[in-house]
Every structure is written in C-alpha cells, then in structure tokens.
Image (cartoon, rainbow, N blue to C red; front, side, top):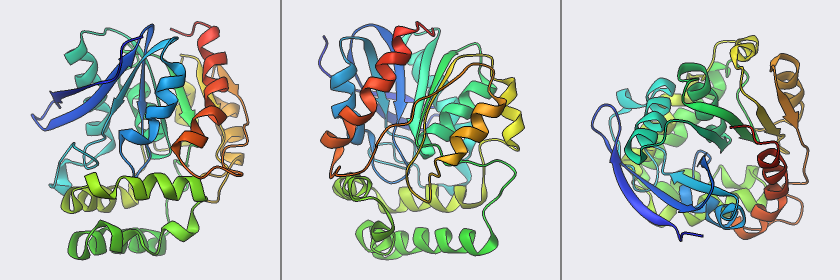
Length: 269
C-alpha cells in the first residue's frame, strides 16, 4: 500500500490546489466537509488503502487550496476541480464521494461529468435542491463567513461548533491551524445560497451506482437519504451510527469504512 503523498495541481481556471494520494486499487476521490480539510479523512483513507487508491483533495477555499475570490466558488467550479485532479493523475474514471459539502460536490461532478464518475459515495449528505435555505439561514452563514474574514477562523466558528456532534466539531477545529481565513470566508459566503442541483428529482439522471450513508444531525438529516433513494437509479443506502461516542477523525473512520468496503465489493466502477 502506498503511503499518502501530497501533490499540487491546478483547477481549470489555473487556481493552485492540493491533494493527498495513497493506497492501491480502484481510484476513489473523497472530499471533506465544509470546515475541515482533507486531513479529516486520512484515518478513513488508511482503512481503505488496501482496497482503493484514495485521493483526498483540499476543496478550494479550505486547507492548502487557497482561493480568496468569492466569484470563483461555485458548484460547477468545484466539480471541475475534481475533473482537473483526475486529469492531473491520468485517471479516466473514478469513484467520487464526500462528506456534507463534499457529497454535494460529488453529486455535481456526477451530473456534469458522468463519463468520469463511475460511482458515488455520499456520506452525511445535506443538500435538498429545491428546498433552498431561508433568507435568515443565508444571512446567518454569510455572517459566519464575514466573522471568519474579519476576526479569524476560530472566532468565526465559535458559535457554530456547539451545534455540531462532538466528533464533527473536533475535525473542524483540527483544521484551524491550516486554514486561510479569507479563503474559507469566500467559500462559505459564496455557497450560502447555492445548491449543487436544482431539484432532488434531478438526481434521477445519475446512472451510476450510488452509496448513501445517511447523516445523523439536523444539518445532515437522515431522512434526506430516503429522498435520494426515491429518485436514484442504483441506490445503496447503509445507515450507520456515525457520531454516538465519536470524538475525532480516528473514531469516525471505522464507523463509515465498512459501508464503503461493502460498496467496493460490488465493483461499482
């Protein structure tokens, strides 16, 4: 099994982005949630490394993928970054997945580049399509983004972390030291009112197999997995106890790894 190596590549617009690559086997891109960076998924990648070549990007705006221009944060651009990463690595087709925000990017990539995405892994999905955030919710997230920009990452997240499961909050907190405040603020502010797809019914266009691991908190409601199941052509929904007693990334990894291994056993690519 290859240890994880840091790589630098460029998005379609020339933005310099970073990722970590390790393991051996079927290529699997996994995108972190909105707040941490790719390091939240390193323990999971280690568990999957004998079954898959696990590719962990820092989403633009987070970690080492600096992008301070709010105009350059859209779901299409995030999906294009996934394709640019595959191009950089010389990979024609891969499994693509993610947690929370990362699951939205995976869905957008599946919709816009289906020839490059052989299967999807959606961990704790949060996006509801036509059920847009309310003006109050948008204003709240934009306020968080502005506080991050003006007062720093730790200050901006101070009012958000208590709303999260302990393990999720720990992963966000771990990324503070590697975060660029202006970059993260640009990302969180830009996507406050955006969705990666217009309607949940749009997901019926996805012909590839899709693993859905339901979320377990108010921002990632478990019932959303059933809404996805109702429209996906090849869904595999596997509920797991994701957060009870979990305090960090090392505890999170073994909760979700068996479901992904089961999906890999089905040879979706």
